[in-house]
Length: 139
Image (tube, rainbow, N blue to C red; front, side, top):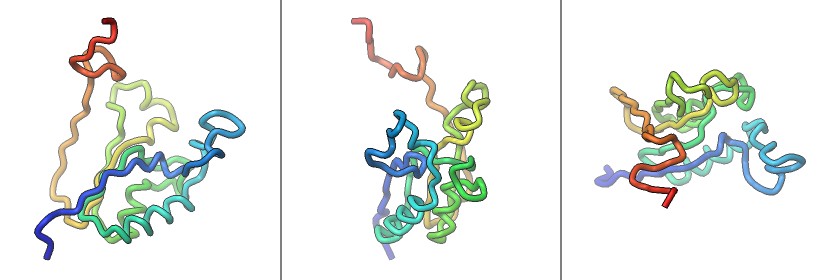
């Protein structure tokens, strides 16, 4: 029995991989790649680490990137025998929810424990997403 939880936070970048090919022939074109190969590598690595909880950033919840248009968090969790929750990173009124690729982007939590409830809160800044509270960029 564990007395401490082993937690991880990992930015999977939509499972598209890394390297110079990500920006060839056009900047950012790699974000349109399929993800099966990279997801399998991530599952293997996560399994080796044996965490209790994994926070995933930049998860694709079912666009053309994933086989069968499945949620990447669901694929990873099922492969590991874990439970998961997922939420789109854009609030319901965001214009990004209307753009096909963007509306499938979000964050997830995967855990070896059963998830019994959930509550999601968007963090919105008063002067736009790119400005953090308390910072004055005009000074």
